[in-house]
Image: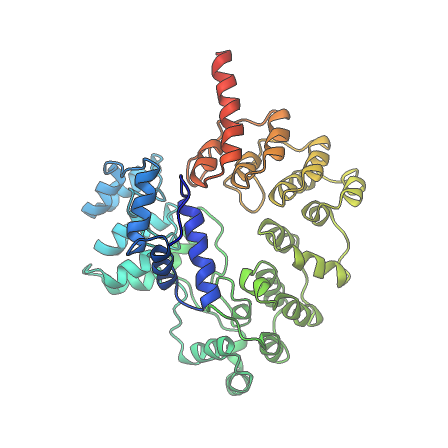
Length: 428
């Protein structure tokens, strides 16, 4: 039996379970159960409860938002969110969206999503709101499931084509496309509520070609011949916008990167005329998929400020910053911080970057939040020396950098930030 650390991290255990699921080719629930058993617990729920008890975390009393959700009061839910209630904060067991998915009505589910709730956020047992809805007994259960299952495909031919992509069945895919060329142009229609959310939605109304990236992850293992699958589609014609956006999805695809399929896919798309937008480069850098940026450079992409910052290439970055816009300087700072490049971050700060500005890509947090999450004390010290505020809260979870270091179990970052707070208290 494996022993837990003195202050176990819930986030670290969740990442362990995800890694175990990939390594053993099993579902997440099975991996969580197996990991819990390794630590001497009969279930994942018991392990999570032990973590909460060990860390002194206890379920908060029901908030007004939870009360409104459980009462099915749509008007109250909308009012409370408008007044600042956070629909993403759980009550120790689940989020408001889980409660709405179980009980209904669908109008409450819509109100929460419009207000910023995440349909992909799991509860303490690892269940998504969609999982809860499928097991729930709401009168409008079918409508709730349809709303939360945003990638459901009604068109049988489109569904068959996506299945062929995921199976790597080039012959079946080619036959479908030759029989119904419309599949190249059509798309899955996402529920309209996702267009009304306060955050950027990616993979909205997906086209067929987009599915080759497996981003979001819809299958655990991509087919080894996914580059041939993509070529089968692009050879039959793909719009420039589809090529460009699929390249962006591939460049930030964790599955493609981890399974060694990113470069072959990128080559097919680039050969077909796909262009890497500035946003594609920033997203790949923001998710630390650095090999995608190197592949672009090897394919002829000029070195730019964001790429140099993300790679930590100090000499070209120093030269490029001299003629950079204010926005490019700020982006360079954020991408350097996200990828842990201390000297590149300092160069951007010297060029005028705002140390307290919210980050590119992950726009809900500041550089100090990122450094705390990464347990990067050297970077924390640089940011503090440049005047970074320790009291700024992220816009999703409403936490300070110190809160983040505590939640993620980053002891060194927590100690560094607590020292700063102690000094500030002494001064006061």
